[in-house]
Structure formats: C-alpha cells, structure tokens
Amino acid sequence: MHSRFLSAFEALPSTLQTALAPLLDAPDFQAVLRADQIASLQQQTQMDADALALALLPLAAACAVATVSHFNVGAIARGTSGNWYFGANMEFVGTPLQQTVHAEQSAITHAWLRGERRLETITVNYTPCGHCRQFMNELNSGTGIRISLPQRAISTLADYLPDSFGPRDLDITTLLMDAVDHGYSAEGDALVQAAVAAANASHAPYSQSHSGVALETESGTIVTGRYAENAAFNPSFPPLQAALVLLNMQGGHSGQIKRAVLAEVENATLSQFAATQATLQTVGCSELLSVRLHKG
Image 1 (cartoon, helix red, strand yellow):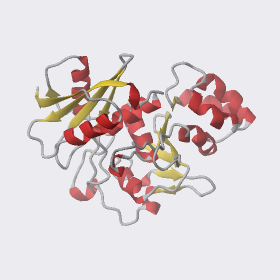
Image 2: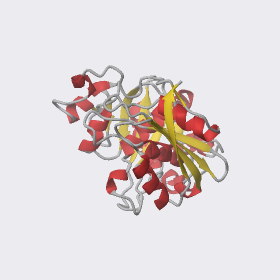
Image 3: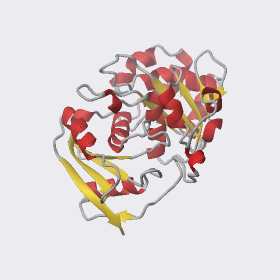
C-alpha cells in the first residue's frame, strides 16, 4: 500500500479495511476503482454506492499535495461506466495560485484522461467552490450531475449553480468528456507523439487553441495531459496540470519529471508555453520542448 494511504486507511471501519486491503496493496493500484471492484466492496460492506463513496473520501484526500494551504480536499468522480476515479487538490510552491488544482478538477480530469466518457456523480468532502461549479458546467453531464457531500442530501449541479452560463449558451455542441480527434500531427519521438495525441483529444471550442503535454519521469514512465477550456474562461484547465494530476494519482510526484513536451497549434490564439515552462521550473524540470501542430 502506498504510504500516503496508511493513516486514512487505518481510520476506516474494519469491514471496509478488510474489503479494501487487497486493492490498495496491489502494486498497480492507481487511484481508480473498477465497476466490478465497487460491486465487491458494496457486497462485503453492505453499503450503497453513495455511502461507500463518502466512506472512501479520506483515501482520495490523502492524495492531496497541499503545500500552500495545508488543507486536504478529496473528490471521487463516478463514471457512467461504473468506474470511480480519485482526485485531490494540488498546490505548487513558487507559482501563482492560479496554477492550483482543485479536487473536483482533479477527479474529473483523472476520469477524462482514463477514457471515461460521462460522469453521473461527484462525491467531495467539502462544498464545491464557485470555480469548480463553473468547471463542472462544461461537462457533457450537464447541470443534472449529482453532487454528494458528507451529512447532506444529494443535490445536482443545478442546485449549486442556478441560472448557469455554459457551453450550450454559446451553441457549443462538443462538450467536455465527449470523444474528439482534432487530426493534428507532428514529427518526433514517443514523448512528442504522446503530447500530440493529448492535444488531439483536448477541449478548446472557444479559442481553438488545442494543446497537450507529455511528461517523462526518471523511470521512463510517460503521462499526458490535455487542455480543457471553459465557457467562462478562467476555470479553464491547463494541459500541464492535467498531466500532473495523472502523475499524482499514479503515485508519482513532480520531482520525478525528467523532460516534457508541449504540443500546440501553430499561431494559436492562446499559448500555454510560458505558464508551462514556469511551473515546470518550480518543480525542478528545465527540459521543455515546444512542438507546433499541423493538420495531418
């Protein structure tokens, strides 16, 4: 079991500990629970899905990197596939607070990067802030997505975000988590191609500034992140942060990054380069390659 889970695990009910231990002890556990694993946990604990997700929140919060606030927030994105994805807040000392990752963004992005196509519920241990409510409004789940919090009745995003403004108000038909392929290509090695693939699946319907990041760690592991744009602009999620979410959920950390590639559209309206470079430098990575995309 990854050391970050130990304290939270020991505080769980004994029946849940017994059921969870084989999953958390698996060397390939990456903060995802498959539908069949959820069903087994429910059977062993006699918890319904909502109660089980709430009980698991301390494990998600244990993934937090709260180096500024020292305030751990955990979230679980529950997909229509039946799979559940952990998420947690992430902060980076030496960078502007705008580079911070919120727990809901983390869980949603984690699910998106794993191939989930639609979410039904977000379970979180604290009330979603306005930033996260607007971020969730970009999802193809719409305002009907359920939000579950400890000791509160389950609500929907519509309850938390009345009179919402989102992509549908701008006649955007391809929503966050819809499957897309923008058809870009670029020459380069495996890390470059991973960044290109990420850019091809990015969500940027407002600026068309599609972008993707690929990170290579010291062990040779490659993780990728995609840009997720938002109708309200400010909650847009950079591709680097998306990649850092995936690295964190896999049990890695930013200090392991050896080199990075940012793939962006040529002459794009927006560029992620300066912010990506600055954040990477604060975590100790100075090798960033910028690749320009073209239609294949």
